Image 1 (cartoon, helix red, strand yellow):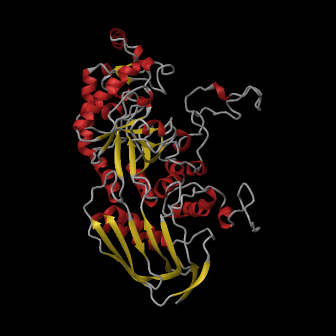
Image 2: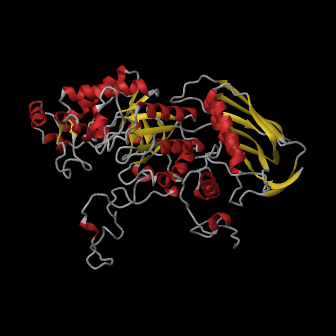
Image 3: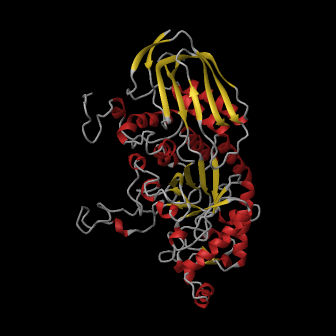
Length: 556
C-alpha cells in the first residue's frame, strides 16, 4: 500500500525522546487496544479510539515532510503493558512510558510503569494518527518514543468563587488538561465574593454565601469532579483560603470576622473587606472543621490552606486584636505567623501535606519545611533556599486573567480630558489600564519561563513544577476556554518536557512555533475553545509572520 503522508507529525508536549522511522502504517479498520487491566486505562483506551476516528486529524502546518510511504501491513493493534495498575494517583507517581510503533505495521506496544503513565502514552499515540485525506483513512506515524515528565506538578488553578463555573465546564477543562499532560487541578473554591462549596459540617456557609442556590457545588458534584479528574490522571487539590479572602463567612458568622464589609480601599486587596479574627476560638474551630471534612473528601495528599494577601490594617481596626497586639508587643505579621502555624498543626493531624501561598514566608513566618510554597510574587529560589518545595505561579508569567483593565466601579481614571495621548495620562497610554498585573501574558511569554532559573544547587527545597492561575473577577463560563487555552499549553510543555532539552539546549520559540500553532487547531478540533494565536496564513506559511526574517526565508 502506498500513500503520501507526513513521515513525522507534530507532538505536544514534545516527548523526551522521539526516534522517527520515516515511515507510516495505515490504521486497520479493526484496530484494537488490548491489555488494559485498570478501569481508567480501559476507559481511556475506548475514549481515544473514539477520538481518533472522530477527529480524523489533518495537520494545518506543512512543517512535517511529505514522503511516499509503502507498507505491506496495517497497524492492527496497540498492546498495553502496565507494571503497576494499582498505583495511587498522587504527588510523584511515575508517569513514564515507552511507545513503540513499528514501521512495518502489525502490533504496536505501550509499556508504562503505572496506569497513569499509560494514560500519557495513549495521548501521545492519539497524536501520531492523522488522516490520509481519504474518507475514513487514517495513518499512524511510526516511531519509538521514550517519555517522562520533567516536573511532577503541572497545574491549572481555577477560581470558582468570584464567578461560578458549571460542572460541565470544569469537565471540559480537565479534558484539555489531559490532552496537554497536565496533572493538577487546583480548586480555589471559595473567596470573599461567594462561597459555592457545600460542607456538611457547615452547610450555612453555602446556604448564605453562594450567589444563588443553583450555584453550589454539592457533594455529588464534588465526587463527580474528583472521579472525572482521576480517570484522566489528574489530581484535585482543594484550597481553603484564609484568613483573608473569607468575607462570605461573615454572612453566617459576622462575629468571627474583623473589618467585615468595611470600606475595602485601605484594608483589603479587593472588595469586599473581611478577614477571620485570629483570636476567635469559634472561628478557628470552623476552619478546623473545614480542614477535617475536606481531608476526608479529597483523596490527594496535599491540602492548600491559602494564606495570601492578609492586610494587617484590617486586624488593627478590631479592638480585641489591637489590644492583644499591644499587650503582647506583637506585630500583625507575627500574629499571622502564629495563627498559620496553629492551622498547620490541624493539617498535620489529617496526614495531609500543607500548601500555602508565599505571602506568609515573605511576612517573616517560619513554617514546617514539608509545607509547599506557591510562589507568585517572588522567585522560587527565595523559598527553596529556605528549605521549602515550591510550585511556581509567577504573576508576571502565569496569571492568565491579567491585561483586561480594571473591574472596580466608577473609576474616573479612564477619562482622558483631551481624548488623546498626553504626557500626564500614563494610566490609559502605556500604563496598566486598571489591571494591576498587566499586560496580558502571551503564550510566548509563558513559554520562556525556566522554573529552576533562581534555584541554587545547594538549596534544600526544590521546584515541584508550575501552575497557571485563572482568577475569575473578570472571568466566567463564557471566557473560560479562551483565557486558559492555548496559553496553559505553553506552560504544560515547559513543565512536562522541561525548559531545556536532554542535550541541555534551551527550548526556543522558533523551535516550538510550528508545533504550537498546529496544536491550537488540534485542540480546537477536540472541542476546546482555544483562541487563535495568529492568522491561519502564518501556520500555513511557516516563518512568514516572524518579527525578524528567518534564515533561508522563502516567500509564500
